[in-house]
Image (tube, rainbow, N blue to C red; front, side, top):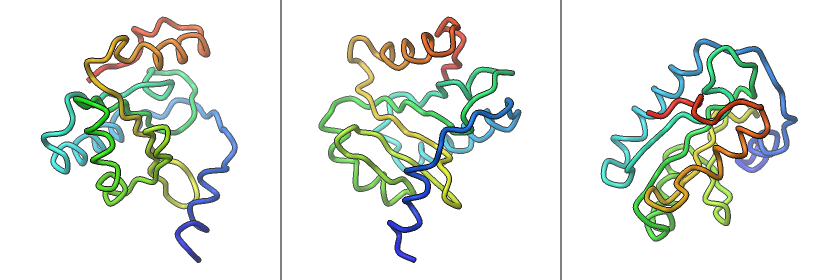
Length: 140
């Protein structure tokens, strides 16, 4: 099977909400620890975000990670290296996905760290979709 053939089920998988998994924070920490040495000078911040970052809340079992970089040029220059580190991408959205066994496991959203508003657009999306204050999300 081709790489695209293995990737297609992950791209088109249905949204699934599952009970909170106490392993999610550890999965984020493991991915953060894996990414930082691969790109030590590129990331200004790597955070755990989204519904899976909220303790005790049912969520889609995907670790959402906003990765703050210094500029859009940084994102463009690093796209190929991100793919070589185990992510697939939709380059026009600066969004990367890790997957295994036809399922998405991680989303990496590259954003400009100092841009205003910094992560507020993502925070607002989650806050309005799950009816909690966005400050509930963990920031690492």
